[in-house]
Image (cartoon, rainbow, N blue to C red; front, side, top):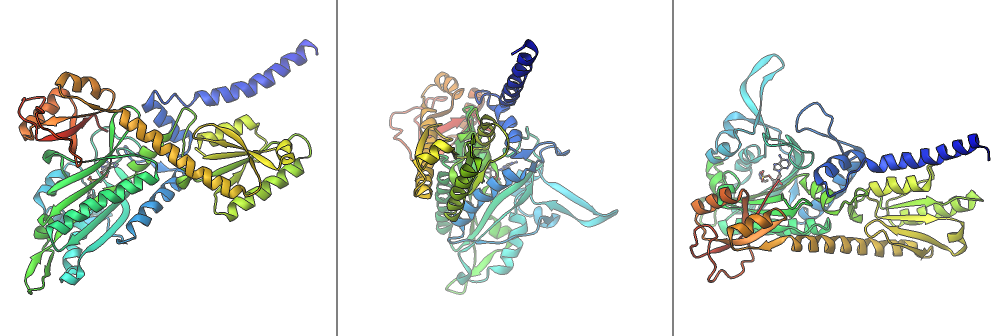
Length: 495
Ligand SMILES: Nc1ncnc2c1ncn2[C@@H]1O[C@H](COS(=O)(=O)NC(=O)[C@@H](N)CS)[C@@H](O)[C@H]1O
């Protein structure tokens, strides 16, 4: 081969090779989590951050499909004993300004509509930051008697918060596009308290289905929802050791019922104020999904929420028809079994195909070539472990579904181990500061608010909350004041 042709040959190979190399270089290592996260949202076509309004982002169809499948799990869990509805986006100022604590909590975050066209509105309208003040004037009309309770409604809507902290897609938005908010009404404080615990049970199951382990804890008094008696929150661990609040449930007592006059006639014919709960999850659940399972090759999706669950790659050398026919047959069989399958018969090189579908987190890749056909088999590659094994074409749907279950189990147990390894039991301030760099600290607290707040200042991180399961505090001291501890608490750097 003369030099000229050889140079051309090298260029072709290096061109392909550099092409792939360049492409792969564009996703930073997950060790550089912030960069990795931002790049991955783009490359895997989850959200486009180029919309010209700060804190407002655009769904790519692929990302929107993950959202759709994720929220169908949430609907499945809520629809057991809630009903879905939809309330107005615009809240008249007088209603919004009714509940003093609520206003205090949201006045710096609420967007206002002041004009209709060029005419100033008589009454300014708030864009709902959350919907208590849109819903509860209607609950006043709907709740009349004991027989109307418990009332359990939810909606999945966009809400608007003028966040002044650093905004980031899926994590801290000014338009929260996927705000699932449930608002329930009960006859007694205890029933509302039961509902708050039920909300946490629902969220724990929801996140288990996403293979995400969570910590639940009661937020300290100064960090509860504005207008609530108390707040229970669920947090997930992000790869950089910080926690992300991925859901909250609030006991509202009869605070809002008194403000919005939500009363019911009890069995003695008395008018009684109702007690309420409300609980919310936003698209942060997707931030947790992407961050918990993703790796240096891109997304890793639990099969239940993967837009493409199996990708078939025909390996073609000679007699392509036979291979393509076999791929079609397998594809039909998987579709008939309700599996989302795509066949990539594009003219890209296999390596480029593997790169693309791994980036999009497809749980299983099936390679089918002449050698596989001879063995009546396909080569199955798992995205979560990278393992490859030959599986028989016979009953392939059953094999795939069993593997899906194993993938989910593996993702969950890996994430659970990761969480467990990043909770550090510390009793002294120095140890707490040390360990906070790596994850969550479990320590003790005297329970006094001034001491708690001072401890937050001294260690530069927030008290995440008081976990329900309390290890004994006997003989334990508050790390700041040295008083007897009354609670064990989580402390963490948060998003
Ligand atoms: N700016 C934001 N961007 C993304 N998610 C957010 C934002 N603000 C809050 N969230 C998420 O939304 C959840 C519910 O918000 S909340 O303020 O705690 N609670 C409420 O608004 C209640 N009315 C729940 S119905 C939070 O737990 C958090 O996970």
